[in-house]
Figure: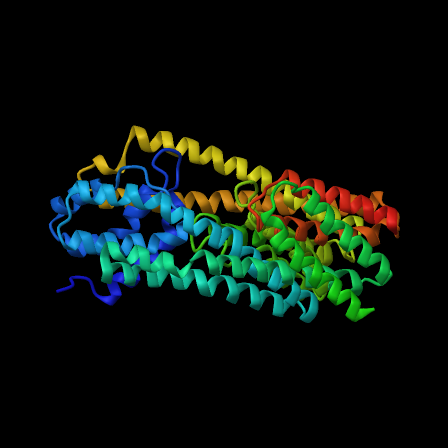
Length: 245
Length: 229
């Protein structure tokens, strides 16, 4: 029988927004994580002494990608409900923070953030300020809020097994797909930017855009992976310039 | 005069609320340069400058969270657009010395603000180690209090930083108006180069490569464009 209601889990989800407010060198997110868990832990451990001793399980340094903490919070609440020992909880936290950061960082920081920023920039350039704002807010927030909030619920339902499930949502194939979309949109953006400018003739703009992209690639010699993203960007930029000219 | 008297405290109050986003309320979710600057441009009736500044800062911010505080950059950029257009009556145009000065000041303040943030993280770590909230008789209450204190501090720091950054950005706009010629051929280059540098940064972040590559690509492509044009 689950002790926590949907309302309790929603309160935990809301508090995830305050995870980083107490971030500091040393303990990092540990105070923030305990603060997020409080509504759930308070319900599970109604006796104040029991709550106090339960909170001490979270004093060890903890740090991961902030958007991935939802699933950790949900899983911990399930473990607490099952009466998990100090050792089990601390081992879980120690063992999960690295892998979750390794999944969250490439997905959110290196794929979702550039994709949504580039898409929104293109929308702003083509359709104006309001379109840019709307695209940015929807493209970025929809996904990360979904992963944060759904993570709490899935974590509470499946316990430790939820980690595999949630990290599966951000598998590397999807990350690569997002990055390729970002690179292609970036190329379209450059094409539109240069061709829209009355100050620069199209053939010069084409040359400058190509040179800029080439220089970027040259600056990254030895990083072959970049070609995967530079190539679609270049092709998209050239395509737009060809169409316009 | 009346508008100036209203605007100055408003910049501080709004900054205090919006800049909380750096530590809470979602983190890089709502207070983004493109959102703030485009909204400011739209509100002042100069949508073009709002989009240009917003797009440039937004693209530069991608993957660079460790180096600069982009929420502050966006906020000071937006406030400076408002102040420049409404209070100083400077018609801001993409690529003009005024708009380039605005972007440059916003980025410089964003880098400085990140250093302040690091300093706070360091001193907070020392405070927590000397008096851990876990050791008290009521750890839950201690944690609640700690979080509230940090939010209050975030408000105060946000207000001060937003006032300082917006004020200096507005002064930079005014200074550029005095120093620069009315129309310069460099304007056309800057109009393209600033967002193009932003795009170089954004594309560079896809491969996880940082800083030197962007700077080199930006500077060299700008130089190449100047020669070509």
